[in-house]
Length: 93
Image (tube, rainbow, N blue to C red; front, side):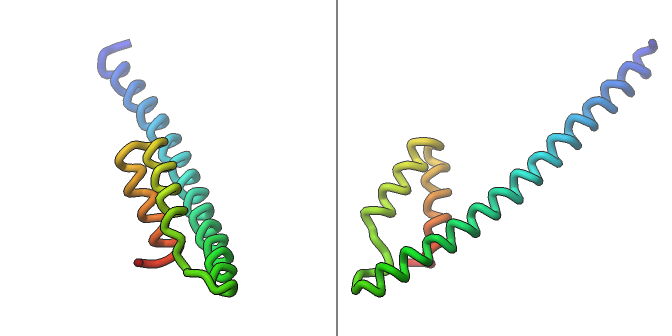
């Protein structure tokens, strides 16, 4: 096998690996989006119940727990992710 043939095989293998991985990432992204949408819906139930019982829409100590959980698991980017999820779930404070 010549060097050109080896490169072609390697390039084809690489393209297959990348293509397969991208398909998996796309599927994961679809699942993540679905989970975020589900989280938003569940958060709305909590907010509605809290408001109906005379409470506030936002529970800051609970939000701090969520931020800490994401930060502990993912580091600084986890904090940003938690903040984004909270904003999606309850809007801007």
